[in-house]
Length: 308
Image (cartoon, rainbow, N blue to C red; front, top):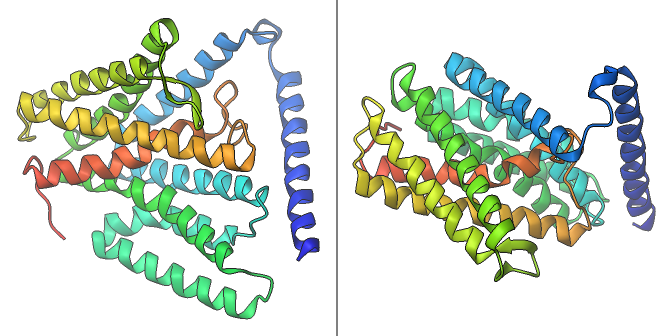
């Protein structure tokens, strides 16, 4: 067993070394005028590219939205498993990443029963893996299943929202949910960095404050009020504000959950895919719970049509 753990740690070290080499290669190929950029400039450029790609994919069609969600789920699951290996876990990355990518596709083609089928097949495959690979432990099975469900199943709520309204309004609504998460994060950061004095969860995320927390809820609620302008969406201002607050709460919970995971395994960032931001999981941690919560709220509130 100790050899397995040492092998996992060695693979993590090799992955980090490979990431550093890729970073050095990218830096050498970067035009001189973009070199030696400040942290703020790097964050802005990376954020601009990320937002642009997300907007284009979501608004273009259902297929590009599915591609974006499946790719996001797969990459985030990969980063999740990478971190957990440093915590002496041995997840089955192949099964977990494939299942995470299949969740949005299964919901698109088969509805909620599709997500159930992916979950059952994943669980069966993990049981077979556990029985015949003697090095696997019960915690490894749990981590493998949780990573796929956390990154893929929760994100599939956006597929339900995307299909509920005709093009392009379904895409506009999904994009609005993305922007509500970004508004929550932005309001919380701007207010918290300037006025934050009371720590929200110092043991999990020391930089978060109660002042920023409430500012983020206000930003989310205000942005949800704009959803009332979307044709075909049966949503009034009072309900929009309530849903915005609930969505904001889910976003904060998702952020804290990923912060707890990183703190447990000793990681500052989940990866290096997004320079200045960390990994893709760092950018999407709030979105996972918001995605499924938004779908439940909109369906339960009778705001969008829904069929199994």
